Amino acid sequence: MLVLVLVLVLVIVIVIVFVLVIDFSFSDYDYANEHDLGREDSLPACNYLIYCLSTTVTTGGFPVNNNKEQVVITVLGANKPGILAGITRTIADSNVNVEDVSQKIMQDLFALMMMTDFSTANCSFEEFQNRMQAMADQLRVKVFIQHEDVFRYQHRL
Amino acid sequence: MLFSLEEVIETISAVGVETFDIRTISCGINIMSCTDSDVHKCAEKVYEKVVRVARDLVPTARTLEKKYGIPIVNKRISVTPVSMLANAFTEPTAVPIAIALDNAAKELGIDYIAGFGALIQKGFTRGDQILLNSIPDALCSTDRVCSSVNIGSSQSGINMDGVYRMAEIVKEAAERSRDTNGLACAKLVVFCNAVEDNPFIAGSFLGPGEAEAILNVGISGPGVVRAALERANNLNFGELSELIKKVSFKITRTGELVGREASRMMGIPFGIIDLSLAPTPAEGDSISDILELMGLERTGCHGTTAALAMLNDAVKKGGMMAATYAGGLSGAFIPVTEDAGMCRAIEAGALNIQKLEAMTCVCSVGLDMVAIPGDTPVDVIAGIIADEAAIGMINHKTTACRLIPVPGMKAGDVVDFGGLLGKGPIMEVGRHSPSVFVRRGGRIPAPVHSMKN
View 1 (cartoon, one colour):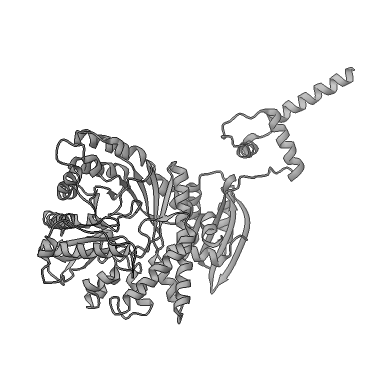
View 2 (cartoon, rainbow over the protein chains, first blue to last red; view 1 turned 180 degrees about the vertical axis):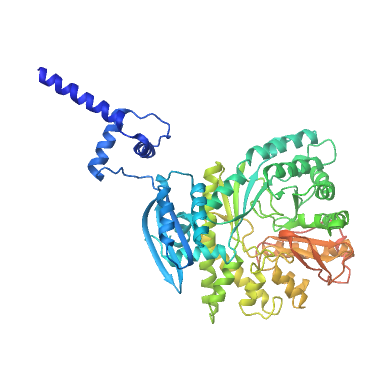
């Protein structure tokens, strides 16, 4: 009996430590997104625990993001070393996830297109556009950042 | 990958190289709730309502421009024809309403606001008379207000008293804005079969059958059609039509996307897309250039009407499938001063006002931004308006006149209105007088709706 009580107490302590110690900053944002809550909403601890456990099981620790906001990034310019590195560094710094990349060199013209998920970004869309523009100016290339809907509407029925 | 690199580059170059844009998002606002017998109180209510309903229009358009990377050139507002409110005024003037609309446009950062107009196709109400008498004053004492008056329809015939009165008003507005080359007339349209959901200024207004507030979108894209034609040689008419349809489909879909998203963000229902090719004075953004690429030596030569008819029809067919609700004027616009190619054709002697009138039989919208000599008599202006209205009435289509009798100028001179209104040559008009005909008074009866051959 005493052992059972001790085990129960231990489990409760582990749960409390888990909820308090874990860094909320990334995961609670995803949780809030998935459950249509604002960022400031307080999260019920038990729901959060179940959520963390479920995502750990299904994705090996990385939360699933069902609220994707797909943004197409296109880069055009004269080919030279460092374009891809510079562009992807800015994307990574903004915590935007690259999902697909297509690149071609057409008569010395560097053409790069990336499909990205903007929903995890750490800045606003406008701020992201400004950051990318600054990097493009530095690299002397042209960058276009557009929501994927504009291409979907024009090229797909 | 969801899209190919070629598809993405096609979309980007349409904007960057081929001057594709969303020409306008127009917010229609019903101002009937602002009615008051005191014109000044009514003006206060109109100002308050317009500013309240359309407050988010410009910020929304800016957000969408950034989100989709497509420029939205104009953000505009139309209201219920002001003559309907004027019926209640004890004071016989509607100028304070125009000033209130002008102030609202300035407050909201909108370049033109329209609806200072009347529907007089069958007769005049007291409100219509008050409004018509106020038009020259209203256009000269405001910067951004546009006026349109419907003087005929296929159902009602042509109100020839209205035609003559409008010719007088055109002349008076030109004289009163002499220092700006008759610029007031660039903001005044005389319609036959006016549509209630036209998003394009200056002829826009919110018709009596429309909702409390509505968003309409006007697309553009002569440059995109021109670029497609430049890449394609030796096509027969079927293939040419097919190519134009495809381009029209793509640009209309973009308009549909922007309209839906703007509607969602502003909480105002999405009305229609106007499937129009609207030129600007910018090089390459010309309807005339498209006609010449189709194989005409100069716009205005024999064959121009057929080329324009085919272009207009293909644009509509391509756009129809892309839009949930098509409406407005929907067709190729052929304004003169706003289209650098048209001006070149006039200067080359290929295009005259008679040929231009023939071209209006097959496209929207009519004799648009046509500068004529300042000494053109009222009777001749009335004759031009009556001819254009007759084309619309008989063919069950919208036609209009935006004529500018430029004070002190004669045929061949060049007038510059600046900005989107462009510059162009003064066109020669007929020298013989229709004065007995246009002064007969009354209405031209409505046409029969059967035996159309």
